[in-house]
Length: 320
Ligand code: F7E
Figure 1 (cartoon, rainbow, N blue to C red):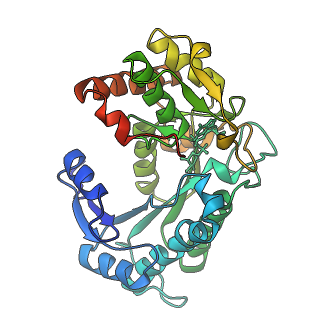
Figure 2 (figure 1 turned 135 degrees about the vertical axis):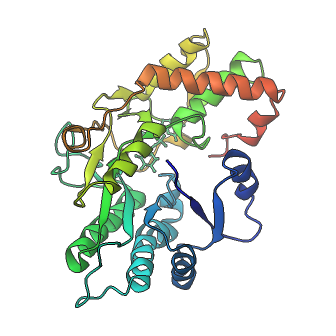
Figure 3 (figure 1 turned 180 degrees about the vertical axis):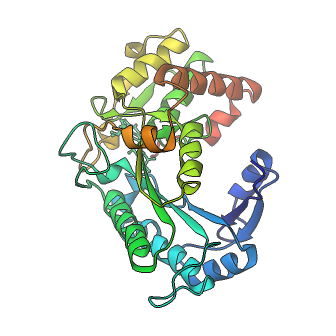
């Protein structure tokens, strides 16, 4: 789309940089950390962005119970620090509103904010009942984004994104754990896949479709929040069945349930009502559930075959 993209990278000798360079060689990198206000101000000053997309977070829900304080700092207060960096660098205050060429801000909000949802499907008016420290931290970021819009007139919006997946998904999340597991079993590297709750349901879509929605949200005349999801929900069991079938296998021969993957509090059922995004953004997902899962299984079969299975070890999820 002609964008010059900068990516924020944290830490010293971050091992993800090598991976990122391979995947996205033309993304320029800049150091910064959501825990460090000064580094974010310096990054915004250096890059002078037109748009900022905050996709950074501790995003793996089980980790948020083990590192609840850090999750609050990064996933919650990190949003405050990014908004403050934009506000300070733009010279915005209670008495000085942003000008017309202001920096536009996108916050990655999440369906995990609905948690134990009071209604199905969930839309922009549905109340929040988060079920994990992750969900609670995201609610803070969501309301703060709304508050900066209302307090300072900033173009700051949240996309309430339901689960979005692709072959690049981290191996600890269930879709990728399953697609990698299927590939390892199909190619003879493993015989078993250990999973947690098979009866939870999620509205799973393709990440590429969701990134298009993020872009569209920042391209509007007026800032607003949107629910982004497919409107179709499936159980984890259905996901497992679809993935094993895609490789010509029967999941019942290989899947074992393991209490280690059961969460202290579960989100049982999520399903989006994306009507506002469809009507106002003209957004619709292009890739459906089965196509998505088959895409992920095919990609992992190819990855493992090309690396004689060694890529599978890199993605070992037994300890998660
Ligand atoms: O779990 C169940 C698990 O970890 C989905 C993040 O991107 O989407 C993601 O959050 C479901 C849950 O994603 C295993 O109990 C069963 O009900 O893939 P997940 P998530 O927790 O829904 C939202 C929108 C975000 O914002 C998050 O950042 O699958 N499940 N067995 C399992 N889940 C995992 N990870 N591993 C299992 O073995």
